[in-house]
Length: 353
Image (tube, rainbow, N blue to C red; front, side, top):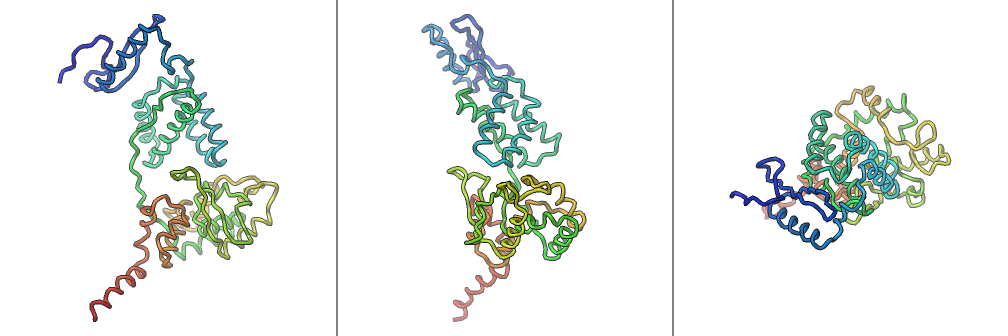
């Protein structure tokens, strides 16, 4: 259906279906706004003309002095520092640095959703990002705008409502007994300082970000319970879960306690400072152990898989792992064939009567 030509409403790209409006405010300044649907453009243009006639001040997003995105990134870092753990903020800073290299000097209100989508696609192709990585960068971009809105520096989140990439959460890689034996020997022989961190990882199911931010107040030797500060938020914000410590975990935590410095963090590097990662030693240990296709996050798969294979029910596994939905835990259900067969075999009692 052809559109009736209305002065002040136009498409920058003919046939795109994205409509803009232009008008002159009460101060004689020419203004443009990207709207989207044609019907919305006609309504807003009429509103702007009415505001001009009534000598009403400009809308909030035009009254305030435009801010470069770099300023809003600083605000987002401050927010993360106050609300999240040190590791989460460190990972955000890495993402913000890449975003700032392209958009840092741009006025935040001038950055459009289509530009952000195009940038995510371009970077994904250039850097061979997986869907999950693209989603993390989109979330970081959205956080910048969300904090700015909370601080009343912007009114619109240009990174909101961007369709997330579908992530393949079906991959399950866990250590076999022989692989663990080889890996433990390699760690003991070459990286013994970090062996307790590895053992606690496969016996607690902690995410890396949760593990490296663990504090001594989270370790209760009396009740032998570990409190894990979850870094993935639930519907009501950050939560905690509690995992009983088995004998191996208790022994490893006691070993780490004997090394304790004034640091409040449990996991430290060889310099006595907070351990923030595993890349500089775990990858080398895997290579020495001839273990392929395995990553630190797969320690969580090892934890969950072994629980299921030991006959632990799915809901208990979900609670211990801190999964947001039971569907995430159901990935491991097929690893308990003997347990499932025993359940199905119980049906035979009805047929044999």
